[in-house]
Image (cartoon, rainbow, N blue to C red; front, side, top):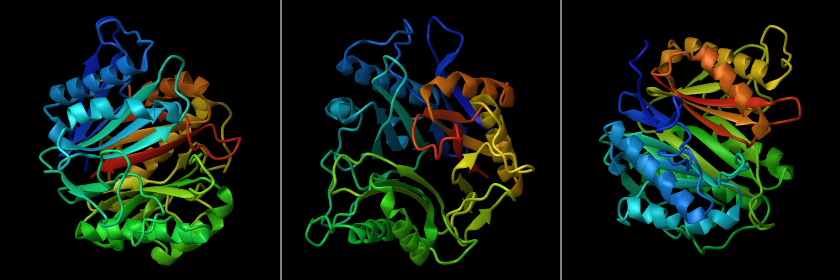
Length: 381
């Protein structure tokens, strides 16, 4: 069931290595990490304004090379070192997406970036998807972005919090977790779908003491084992005691019953599948570098990354596909010093530069001390 994966690269003038690339399967395209490096010099500007402008300029160039436009962008992830850089996002954002009636969904993540980098971008595009903004009456983002979008049969949210649409208040404690899940349900229903269409959820928890209750709410919403979305949970600084949870959701409308996949020996403790197929899209939960034959993690980031890629390949086989169906890989690393080791494993696994999934490296959300690398993948089948 292998599809033709089309890869488009954005090269700089002074390096054989692509600055960024985009992998497209069918109508769905993902970018690798788009940095603020100047294609002409390979260098980074020292100022935040210049870096944000350059990152968005490189995004436009990559889309153009791939035969796509800003109208095809469905979701944009912005990664910044910390919240002090948030004010620099909206200027290039509004230049690229000027109409308040047609903007992509957007999520901003705070995570340590390599030395000198202040921002990077990661995009999902749907060719000809006719992006439609979605809102939940009573809720609005402080930034100029929608609560979510629908592009074709794909629904993607911006960040979803636990504010109550009825009055705009933020409930305390467990009630905020309940409300966040209700808001997710409301968004997919506003798009014309239902809870059974939800394919993948990111959960950002400000206080991991609420993890057991979040799992309870999860099981209440998705009660059937073997028919649950994939999920990634991150312990995350949400910037204050009153915010306990944020969520980000992907749904595939009209896709029917979910197909869940497991690899014996590396399952999750929480009631989530290793991967979920929804229509023609496959989303994974976190895939570690654990060896299924031994139940142990190899030593070192390169060996863990190699095993994690092998495990991702096995997931694709279980879904009746191959690694040629992989469109995007997010490699979560416990430390930015692991990036070269992960790239070594990546080049060994995908030696053809012109035939790779998109790769987004992110220093965020790796569970425990022994796990150095964890993958979250998306496949198009």
